[in-house]
View 1 (cartoon, helix red, strand yellow):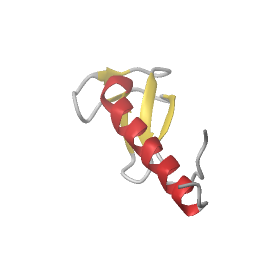
View 2 (cartoon, rainbow, N blue to C red; view 1 turned 180 degrees about the horizontal axis):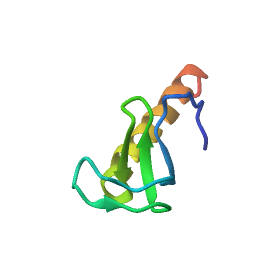
View 3 (cartoon, rainbow, N blue to C red; view 1 turned 45 degrees about the vertical axis):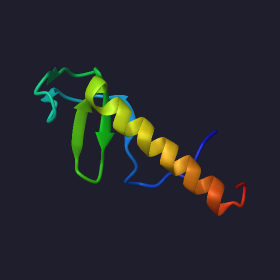
View 4 (cartoon, rainbow, N blue to C red; view 1 turned 30 degrees about the vertical axis):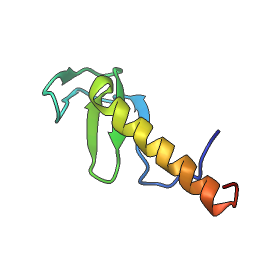
Length: 71
C-alpha cells in the first residue's frame, strides 16, 4: 500500500557521496544504501535510519486511510 508523498518525506536511496552517519558515526560510502531525511538534510546509515523510516511510512499510511474514510 502506498501513501501520499511530499517533498520533505524521508526516503531510502543510495548515497551520492561519502559522509558519516550522525547517529552512530559510521562512515557512509558513496553508493551505500541510506535513509535520507530532507527536512533536516541528514543521511543515516540504513541500520540507524530504517526503523524511523518504517515508523514514518506506517504513520503516513494510517493518515491517508483515515483521511480517505477507510477506518
